[in-house]
Image (cartoon, rainbow over all chains, first blue to last red; front, side, top):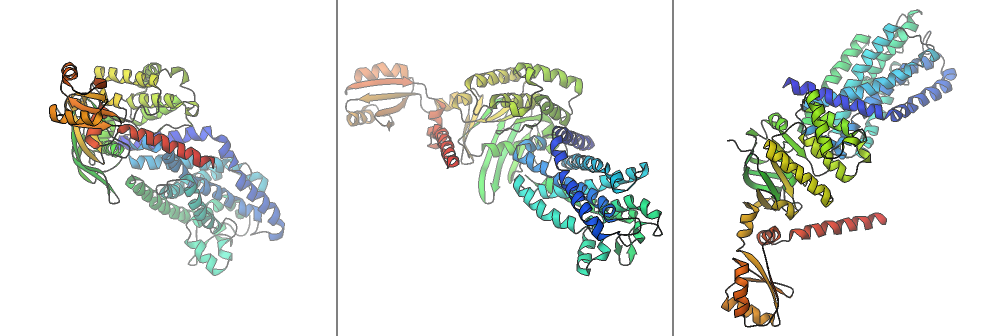
Length: 273
Length: 324
């Protein structure tokens, strides 16, 4: 029934947001990690590494990567709330209510995505500091891609969470999965310019295209002023089979990934007892 | 009239272990039905099957005429459940927990506000509605969960050990209220318990042991089936007394330490005759109505109170382990 789907989405998302408001400090403290990365890598490597492309220095290259990383980590960890609910019994209250399982999963994904996007948006404040000027169009594009990315990767977190019985277990598994995925997604290096074996892994990793899309949104402005015109042609983009990936293609890949992850999450969540 | 609950040959196996074994029973609308048995007898699994959280591995179960496997959402709309363990969100306030529930069940906002106020006032939690659940005592949480289970006006209410760990005052309070809504709104109540005093108030009870139902009837009938009243006797010569009882009075006896127990119909009338005619020397004698404990002991060979002692012992053990 449609009603039970809508009601499930909104009531579950509503609670996630209530929880989010109550745990503001936790949300802020999880920003410490990306900030540390920016400070350490930015200040530490900027001089040594030198410009990545015309008009793009290392910290400008890395900043959109860190934004993506924040969104990816936050949304993947949002599955934690399902494990929490199971451990503290609230999941039973949700499962016995007349709301659809698909609705519950989407509600959780939306709640987690909003957390992720709020965190990402807070980091936007730093854009002028690293020398990227924000325009309304840029922010709108960023939020759109961020939402898509967050929803897709929440699906991943939920999928893992449906099989986990304890928060510690979930945390362990996620850390084991998240760090390789993120380190091999081009957050810290241009994937076209590394050893072939690393290139292969990075280009199989779907997160690479998410990071690339966000990076294009932020850096195309800087690059337009140079002779390189945009990221896809600058050597710091992603080339697959000789083809330089544009934003639209990146987005299509995330869309496909998100569809697979969210439907697997719904499937797995509905099957559990 | 459709039955509120109709269970036919339902089984549940977990990894080769049969937790609920070919169970059949039905509950009428408006009935207070008790599921009585020791821990691990299959009570909670049965509740989980009936409220669509667990699929049975065999048999058919209907709640309000809907199948627990096929019509899950129709059932979920019409039942209220209070689980054995707390299922509140401890980071939210009492009101937020109730709002979540009301939204999830599609209760219109204005109706919900009045119901929430009435119910919270009734269980004495109205002035705590904006407090977080973290600050609530066990009894307060239980009362709130009961309110939550009722706020969408379910036709069938499932209560899994609803008063476990509550003080007698709160227990009476909750029962007073449940009685009222049952009378006023014809709500069917299905509950599990191992408090015999609670089981005694049920219209009918099912005694369950090792996943099987060993008896279903009203508490009164079950007690009468034991063969009447329980007489307990202590004499100066117990073995002589035992011999006399079986030869002269042909009653089946049971010896509990230095006490001889046997059942007779109409104990009050039996006693004067017995005392007059008994040849041995009586030290003490008494008669009492059989209790559900006797029923339970007779049906399962176990004392349900042993279970409680076990729980206490387990708890002590876990405290000891923690201290280490």
